[in-house]
Length: 282
Image (cartoon, rainbow, N blue to C red; front, top):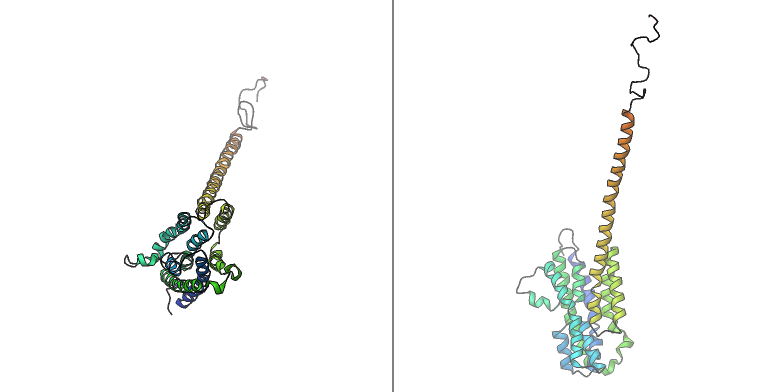
């Protein structure tokens, strides 16, 4: 398969995208089982995966319902979690540059995994391939495993024992980690983790994720202030040095120009041809 100059081979992009789609798509089993256990019917469970198609929001919704929460509160938490996809879309719209007629359909696939795969690509061609293959494979497999999980909820049992609910976050972190190359990026990620985990027990579902997004402007602000202070200090040092050098040069120059002779300024050793005050003839 061909690729753009400087880009990854198409086969490598497809392989990586399929790996993400299959790995995360299997976690649809966990959602199907959890949704059925929360009281939703098979049709309602499948409708969520078909129409909403964002795993974190879906798990937040059925998890709140399973815990006996109010449906409106559960829906609000799911909505807050889904807000991040709008920000993903702003970035992907520039990278993909899709025709207007295609954008509404592509928007359905704007989620964590497709965004991570797309952002990891070096060229527009590979971005489009990665986004499309990841979105298609994940959408098909997620909905299929949702159906199987909801239908066979009693046979599968407790999803915590299988660990399927952790497959999605684990894959996303594996994709994100290699992209954190600078100290600033690592600081943003670390602060976001601290905010998200620290506020998780005290805030409604979905809100800690939004608060964690404040890590980026906070770190960038601190970094900008440090750079401005460093630039100010570096520009002040040459000026002070130049002033000191000018002062030293002026003093040295003044001393150099000062005659080394007598008090009246006559040079040392100068010959005096004036009259002989002793009265002796020459």
